[in-house]
Image (tube, one colour):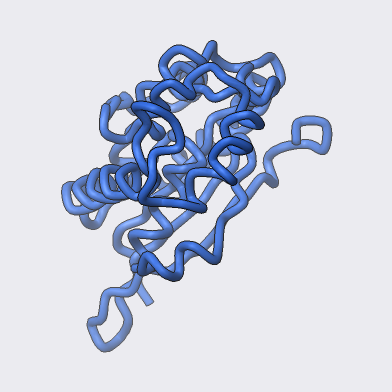
Length: 217
């Protein structure tokens, strides 16, 4: 098989709000923790080595502070300008922003995915509204860069949206499964063309953290 398009998604490093269990929207996100910065530095070394062998043609990111700070570290070693895309941002949390996730999930009866058509806080998106926005944006990026290598620095929810898009998961199936995404992980999708001329998306790696040490994880 021949690889045409490759989509590489990375999650941001540990953020301060991750360490405290706080909802990290526009207000709640105060950037990367010291541990998160170390994680992204190790991620950057790996991405830079990859870029030397197989250059990335495009680099996209999200506007949340923890992702922007991750991008700043990555671009110190990766000579590809990042394009911030507003619609790639994580879910809009409404009044949940800045509050403890434990309290939000307790009041809602679980995480947003468990009742995907209902807002989990006043003014929040529903999970399915977030997925519609994120998958549509990812599809536009893939169409724009067909046949190229694309790097996306984003959130765990972005990686989940990519899986929903490329696995073509129906709503009923999404209620019974999830995806573990550690901080500073790499997920890799490749579009292959087989000998019959058929284009097939293949998941080459998920939640790859080989570049991190045990202390970083």
